[in-house]
Length: 461
Image (cartoon, rainbow, N blue to C red; front, side, top):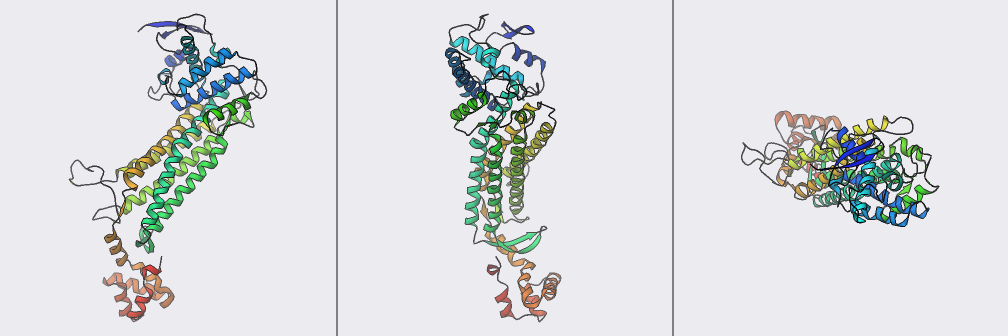
């Protein structure tokens, strides 16, 4: 491999000749060979580019950076945001806990790409831009990286996770209407209970997702607050007054999202409570999705020797040895995702509670896991919705059979014959393998006409 020489404050570093990153990126690449596939999320890199672009123009407005330099930085940032330079960010998550090396990775790529765009060469010893003095002007890794975390998480949630959940909610609503006249037996403690409609059952699932969406939206109110302007410890040292507010305003303009400057930069650097809350809302969503998926899995069990009240779409053969078997694969994938999201939340909690004094140094860990959770929930909801839920059918024959066989229809007789007599009817029917009606008449507790009047599932839902 051919190399060029780059320099930082520690000296010279050999860097692959054709890449845009520089000395500090290469040092990190060599020093942290941990989890080579765990690259820093590209969404965070793109978020950093929004910050660098906004910071450049803000520094220009404050008279701290020339228009030429601001323009060059802006052009490269746009390329990064568009994904044109994604292969120039090779660093893994498992690096310094402040994300400093990724911040410098972005700074160095901007410097070297700008050099080439301006007609220079990567090997030039004198660069038009300096990674610290120009691209990082009025900033610190300690405020840019947490700001990027919030930007990336917010964008991922509103552009991917929430739309997927909204689509899932809509189909659940449609199913609750589709099944609204299908009366079935309810179950509590996995035992027969009084009837309800399949539509009512699905309305509960719809409400769970609607509630989850609302909780996520509430948590986003805090995530939109950005740490930029706090610089090293929250005091804003080396940044002009009002810098953070102006940068946040520009980022909001670039993204079309309501980002604002954090009210307290000390809090914004030292902790990540907003992302903890967001992660918690994603965990809550994962718990709701697991409950819904497991209910559907159970109701679709069979098809002949289980409950068999729902019919799953047959997407692929379910077994390599048992011909004709169809498995609830979309449900399995969704519930595995939910388990991972809950695990991610635990990692975020540990990272967030481990911050010390003026800086939380588990930032890359938190960023990786929150973005992973947001991506997974969105992907899994889309897959489950398209490949399972939309094609889900009610097995009317099995539902009717279970309803007619249930002993718990006797509950409607309690107001007529009393709780204890109703219990006697159910017990006799069970022990002698009779219908409830046969048992009630045999005990002399009610006439055939009155039984038909009172035991009507349509009146019980």
